[in-house]
Image (cartoon, rainbow over all chains, first blue to last red; front, side, top):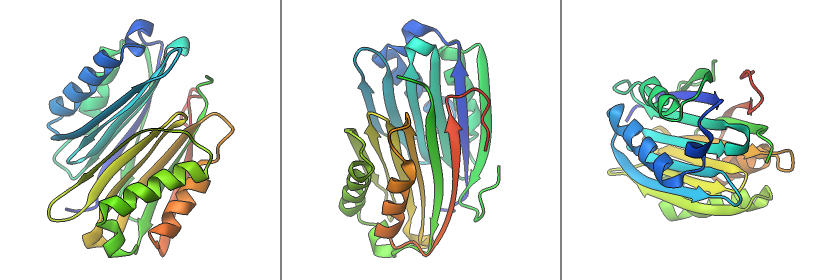
Length: 119
Length: 119
C-alpha cells in the first residue's frame, strides 16, 4: 500500500453533553462514520472514564478514527486518518460532528506519508 | 479534566523493516513508550495486515498513541496525543523512533483543546 494518507484533526465544541458521555452511542457513531466513508472496520476499542468522558478508537484497513470526549466542557477531540486516495476522511469527520451535535468545529487536514509534514 | 492537550505527529522513515512487521514487538514498544512517558494504559488494540503492516493503538488515561507501519516502505506513521501538562508526548515519540531504528524523523506538535488549531 502507498504511504500517502490524509489526517483530519477536528475540535468539536458545544456538543450534546449527554451524547459525549454515552460510550455505546459513541462507539456506534464511530463505526457508522467509518462505514459511511467507505472504510473497512478492523478493531474497535472504547473506554469510559469516571466520573465522565469517553476515549476510543476504530482501527480501519485505511488507518484510524479516534475520540476523546470531555462532557464537562461539551468538547470532543477527534481524528480521522485515512490512507490512500479512495476515502475522504472529511465524510467521517462531518458525520461525527453532526451526530454529536457540535455547534462549533475547528478542523485541519494534514497530509501524511509524503516526507515533510505540511499543514 | 482540562481539555488542553499536546498532539505529536511523527513520520518515521528508514526504520528496521523486520520490526515494522512484528505485531508483538510493536505492541510492547507502544505500551513501554506510554509507561516511559508516565502515562496510564487503559486499552490496547493492534491489528496485523496481510501480506505486511501493523496498525494499532494504546489508549491511555491521557489520550492515545497510534501507529500504522508500512514495512515495504520502511515507514511508520505515529501519533502521540497527551492531555494535560504532566506528560510530554515527545518522550514517547522519541522512544518509539529509537526502538524502530528510524533514521529520518519528521515531527510536528499540535496543541489540542484550546480553540483554534495552531501549528
